[in-house]
Length: 141
Image (cartoon, rainbow, N blue to C red; front, side, top):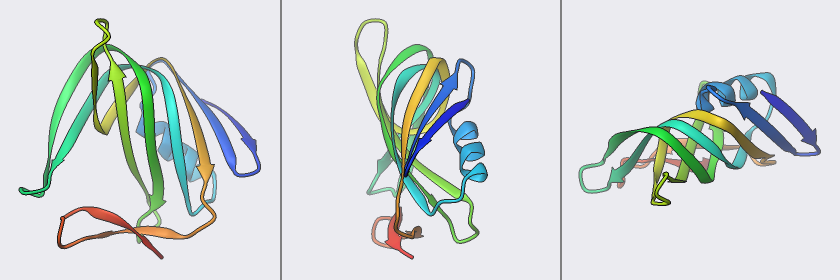
């Protein structure tokens, strides 16, 4: 993984075969920040995507294998109460027939590359369980 830094923004370049979340965890552990917002594009070899069923208060997951274009990744990184990074990433991907799929990204193995813009947040935010939705929502620390 390569990284470039300017003020509060990092550009990360992941390589084929990299696990998105393993590399992001390594990156967070190497840098001290309270939180960040991320955007990205590139290619994926394998994906696990989900959607949240608000009535059942649970995620439903599906695996996708094969080469996909990452047309958009959006998300954030915050620390939990123990100081461990929590990733909330959504993505849209297209297959070889130009059909799009998307959802909450649980796992992603990089295809040719994945290029990310990570913008450090100057505010201290955390995640806490919301009783009404069952989701781990952002709150000011």
